[in-house]
Length: 394
Image (cartoon, rainbow, N blue to C red; front, side, top):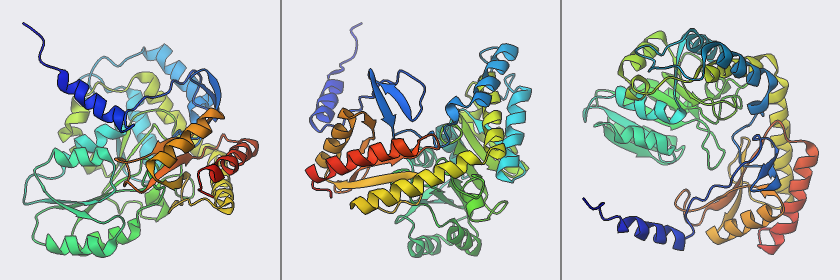
């Protein structure tokens, strides 16, 4: 038997190569900290989701080591059969306490929450899923796995959301899904208005808070807390791999929601459970966030300072109101040149270009961390000031 014809792969590769769209991830050779080593050189990291710098927090690392010592490296099963350990349940209790809700369920990743939970909430074309146009790819994949009707509204456009709800008034179940923080622009969903419309039209609300946990809300409890809507949002999902510095997916809501997800989410039922060390680190990360508010405060000090300074240099930071701060470049070639110029000077800030954003909306995306010092930020700002004029950005 000859292997199948794979020349189509080479064709696809060449196409991507030609358009400079290939992913060629750099290699990190140290912890993911504000000052790290990438591809053999000292780098200031502005591309991590590690907002609170918890990946290297002593308490989080120690919890992982202790649990590994006690329970081993893996759980040996899926959660549904023999892989639910006491530490998994402790971590879930901690998430519920942190989010101010009855219960939570932890999945293998933020991605697997969306692809496993969304299909468990609708049954067929008599139901409708209504999505923000800029929702994350994992939400889009979850929607594709359903047979529900679909509606999309222009990004954060409440008039259009209402029009779509009106158009689907006779649908059996209506599910509105939105990201909390939009990861390309750093803007946030008007969740209070979404919730009002949902109430009016009898819809359920599903918010993905991946970039909001540890970031938004007075104590970093996320977008639901930011709008004081605890207990009023049906499905709050998220991730441990961003501000919480570990890895894994989060669903927070009522006890009934947890039970339903546990019985119907294939991605939860069919994925090996999180290693003991990860479960212990998840719980520890939330404890650190709740006990040491200085990390959250520091993140916002850095965010406000860096955004204000970029703007005063004349850069356009788009609609950002979070630690995700884009520097708008327009053309893809300009964003790529900017990333290269920064990279040559030891700063990691990724270019975000078509097809991830519209063709004329290319940008550099910078992300703040509580671990960055004022000196780190000033060094980066000097660099932006040096490179900006060469690319006609300032």
